[in-house]
Image 1 (cartoon, rainbow, N blue to C red):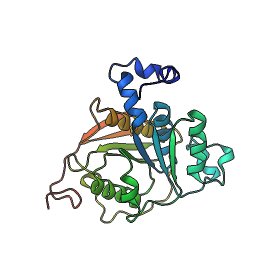
Image 2: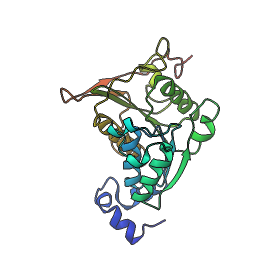
Image 3: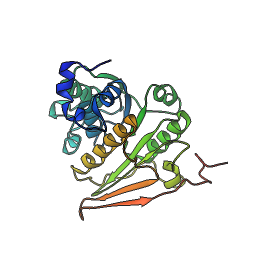
Image 4: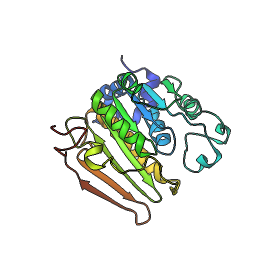
Length: 247
């Protein structure tokens, strides 16, 4: 549908970009993105997707908000303490734009429910904080053929990459599941770090939806906040990968 006058005002800065323009903004308004984890990474990712006009956003998180989360999970407020994260985040996104459609999943993503959920979306953002969930998302996205953005953070360091299943290196090509603990003791992060990585994830989702720019595929971006250094590490699809390999 053509943009309304109000939408042209809201997204005027996008319309001024030749890579987006009115047609691109219409495509964003029709797009559907799933954010798995509405904490440190998911907060900026979901907020910027909503601000960009992604028309339907799914929010998946089974946790309740705690006081210690305020240091980094910026989509929530002090009033969110004790509430389900997806409900708190949804309230904030609706304050930003009432026209955006939201679907809330206040429970864990599992092997059983992932296929039905992922089938509804164009792009998935892995904003989880444990290896078990990240490997599950990699498997589910591969099975569903859904592109996704991985990011991980710890202390002052972060990393992110984008995966197009069956076409590019996947999460398991780079990170091996065997011997990796499901959980790790909390170590930070510094509060602003997930803001950097989560924002990159939102950009990657928008680029994928619009088919513009060069996606962060077959490349792992690493960020060192202490040294303020960013590196790009080339990665390859592993022919022996147990998830996407030839066997």
